[in-house]
Length: 208
Image (tube, rainbow, N blue to C red; front, side, top):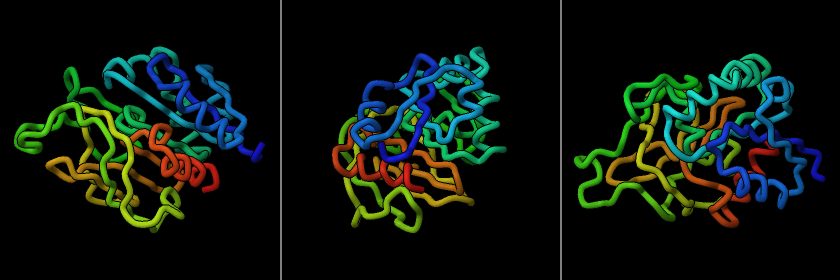
């Protein structure tokens, strides 16, 4: 073990197997939990996610996980990483299936890619795309230049006007690909599916 104990939040909509497999490859002790008390006491947290924003935030609230997440992220200041839908849930709100408020950990809204933004490109945005990296933070340490990471999503966040270290991807428009602010980390792409670059990023998160 590398000494890291990571709790992956299970609310029924995460890509749990891929994330836990990547963490175990990095020799982490992985705990998968839907228990609010376990999340309140976690040393570090990962919030994965695939699917609908509205259904996901509803699940977090019905399972009493929202308050536990905010306690750990904002009060205890544990390391927290949101992946794909997990990152979007960290936003202020989303227009998916109507306006729904999020965890408000990232000062940005979630909207669907519009035809005006993407022109002839297809939605969902699927595949490896180059990320314009801000290397001043922890997530991309040791990852040289702008590198490709794996995306699959129809909704996006725009880079916030203030606060945080921001990396972007262009899909007709520059959207938020990764975010870092103190103990809060997020990626729109899937590091667990992004080969060696993704594993390096996860390792950087663990060491932050």
